[in-house]
Length: 254
Image (cartoon, rainbow, N blue to C red):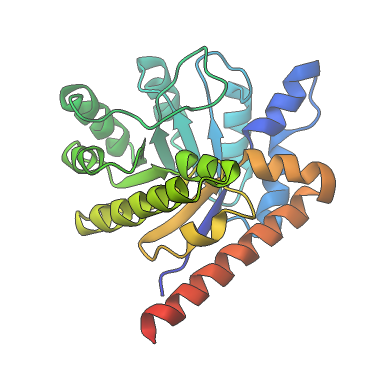
């Protein structure tokens, strides 16, 4: 059974801080608390408009946390320079539009080989592991392998939306896309991660997919922390993930 890691995204701790200005709540403190609760890594998205995470946050996280830092970033020269300066453990390349409230879909890798391949190579030359945040579509997965990425993070947003809306057919179809996408990515030698919109109620079936080795979850955990505390939310999420992975291994080995 492959272990399953939890990456905790602390962006929206910064969103709350920035709503009023000042220094509270501190994303670094949230990251340290998440690690204490069992998080295997920390994710932070430095957007071009700096709507939540700031450059100062990235510097503090890189210096102070004891687990890998995954820097989510757009494919721009500005972000490349920042990544090369701080050298996080990993960089996850994501699409970014200023008008969107959150990342609305996966990066379109198809047709962008000449743009993405050298960008990926520049990051890797600095010892940064490169992930592409993509929809679980075969053509996007295959294109990701061709540009040299080591990791793909499969976008689970549509799966989660279907669950929230109670659309059982769409939910099953989206889960099937994730299962098939993870299998294809693994067969191409890509490490497989997944994330976006996952909750206590939706994480189980995704955690059961054996090829997936990391889930990145943020907004839900920060929201849940209002009611139960961040430590409790992370502990519960890790427990649900581990329970689902163990149950899945039992099915596959029976």
